[in-house]
Length: 230
Image (tube, rainbow, N blue to C red; front, side):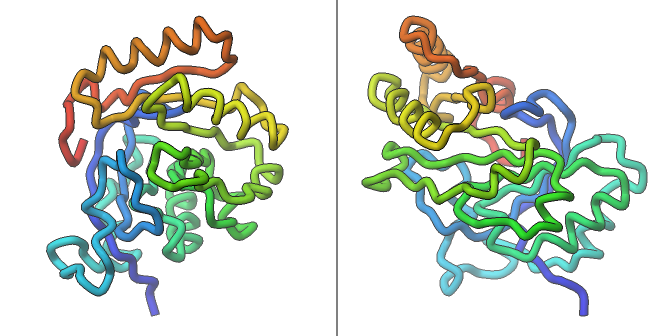
């Protein structure tokens, strides 16, 4: 029997975040999430499963139907598996099929779920986004992340709302786990009304505070604003 997935939306755009920023990508946004971050820009993916309506909040698609949506020739080199939280669904068969077709798989995850060995090897870019206290979880939501030591193909994305309080928390997270500062990417709250001013404020705090982390925007936010499917 073919593996079936709950899909929120499929679209092709430019990757707007992280180390793969600016690269064309097909996006497979999977439905469901196990967190409820206050600044989430895709809350439509985490309506409670028992309240969600198939065909409205999500569509059930087999792996073959998803693959049929993709071009036969991978003109856009990336396929981004995002959410919600994609790791709540069985992604090894899909990742293997995408790899066979010549796509590089980007996995956008909160890092709470340890990937199986096969999936760890197949994914080309692990975009791991631990949640700080600003997401609405009192003590942050970090997870053990021990599995990061088994791959070099990861980077950490942190959403920063208030640089004065969030940057020390990021530093505690990174240094407390012995992680490389070069793997850390900071981006401002994508829901901020004055996004450019928020981005500039974050950059100035990093510069003036001597933090060794990269600051990147959400490119899609700058190009198209708060829209779906981009």
